[in-house]
Image (tube, rainbow, N blue to C red):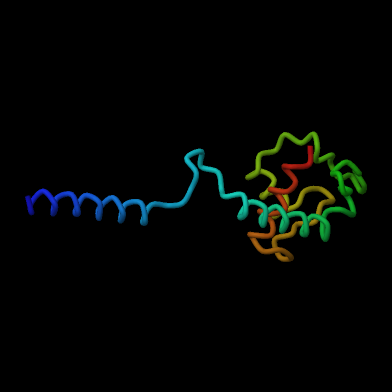
Length: 113
């Protein structure tokens, strides 16, 4: 009887450790809403500070040759490269923004549809 109790306790202990140590990520691989909201808010702030002048609040302004972001087919990675390196009359932001700020702005720009 003692052996049965020890095996049961060991099982529950292992199950508890496994659950406690597993990542708290949803099965679909998406970030939690709170973290995603913070990232979008940071991206919106960067966009309003650096991008709104040429792209406009809705991404459609097109001042100084700026592209309409709402119809862009660029991936997130391509947007990060574009913001980092610039293109044509667009300023490269590599020296002005951190990698996290660039990624946040690129992520926010994906929402402008």
